[in-house]
Amino acid sequence: QGLVERGRAETGAEVACVDITPVGPPTSDPSCPAPSTLLVVGTWSMQLRLLSLPGLQEVCREELGGDMIPRSVLLNTFEGVPYCLCGLGDGQLYSWKLDPPSGSLSERRRVMLGTKPIMLRTFRSGGTTNAFAASDRPTIIYSTNKKLVFSNLNENEVNFMTSFNSASFPDSLAIAKESALTIGTVDEIQKLHVRTVPLGEQPRRIAHQESTKTFGVVTIAGSTIDDEQFWVRILDDQTLDTLASYALEPQELPCSITSTALGGDKAMYYVVGTAYARPEEAEPTKGRLLVLQYSGEGKLHLVAEKEVKGAAYEVTSFQGKLLSAVNNKVQLHRWVLRDDGARELNIECSMLSNVVALYLAARGDFIVVGDMMRSMSLLMYKPEEGTLEMRAQDFNSSWTTAVSMLDDDTYLAADTSYNLYVVRKNSDAATDEERNRLDVVGEYHVGELINRFRHGSLVMKLPDSDISSVPTLLYGSVDGAIGLLATLPQPLFDFLHKLQDALRQVVKGIGGLDHASWRSFANERKSSESRGFVDGDLIELFLDLPPEKQQEVAAHMGEVSVEEITKKVEEIARLH
Image (tube, rainbow, N blue to C red):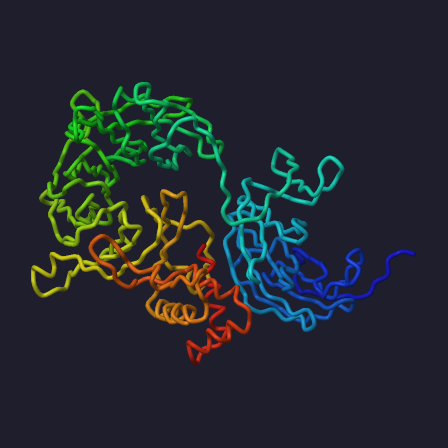
């Protein structure tokens, strides 16, 4: 019969990309989808246009701004909500909610998926249609609780993707790269992918080195004390294959590891802190600081070593130098060049004021020390004098398990009673006594033994989001859990605290357990209500409540709508 022209439209600029995917209500017969009613066009004038079908009358226009051309557009329905997506040439992705009858766009959002052009395609997984963004950081776009979520794929530099279904490869995807074609299936879509790699040894500490794209892992091999061996392993950060190994001496237990530059060296080093665990000693009296360099091709060599009088429980970089916690001392080491051309660590200064210094965190000239029994103390480095000075202490006793610096004045710690607590220094206090004290400003019961904090995030943050600048901190626990802490602006914290109180009145705990009691701070000395924290798990439970319960929560808060609460909670949920 031939092709019949049904409509014509002038865009005023060259067309860069088009899509005509149907996004109307589903039909009773899934094999016969509803006809397309909208056409989306991206142009070289950095515009997005929606045209009605079949006449091609323009119903909506969006200025993308900037100087990047749209490379791919897509219409798709996620959980019954129609969306319009637009990928640009620099890895940016724009998304809008779409109203098909009117063709209008709303709730514009932007996220950086990578740095190279994005190609958008749909695919089916688990009975739902999701979107695939091919780029240098390929991403699966799906919806949870009526909001878009972005999940990175364990591939890189994907150019194109299409669905692929055959008897040998049912419900698969074909992924094209520069020099390879991959056919595979997508696991259950999730934001956090866990990959387990058997080491055959017990890992004790881990550090990442960006320049060599490796992990440094200290391990213990052997099934009994008599046949224990201690190793420093270097693993490829993508394949997790072992690239190089360094054997420690007998009875030399690895305690800490960090990746750092030292002095003016351009090279990156792994620094390992050790302790000689001798049966006749109650506390180690000898250890070593080992400076190791991985130079590629399976070579890990010892650049320098420094004997210390105790266990090097923690090592961390500090202004081009090395900071270590050795038994009850905090020591600062300089990286110096000897006359024979070799390099070594020399002690510049130290501070002796702890029962056992286990943890270190540094920011600027300030150092937070986590003590085994004496909570936290704050040290200041004076570069002109080359000394460490005690500035303030938390005089509450606490069995500390991890510390971190939230900002210049606020510090976070975890303890053996499964709590978190926050202290703040009093820089502007009137008396020396107040300035020398770290005041507790936040307390919270987590219910897990946290043994590590790390600054960072597990997800991409939307740059135009209200909370894109919120600092986040990850924690790991001995139960194997990974959690996230966020430092919220005061108005948002006040709103969420009020929402938490309202949710406690509406949502009843399993078995009648009281949420406020569970989150109360408690150790062997005292018990008190949580303060300075809100429970994100309880807050996000609002999104799963039936509409009548959401209205009840809004009524308890007073003068706030369900829509406003939902929007704020969805923003918080995007942090993880």
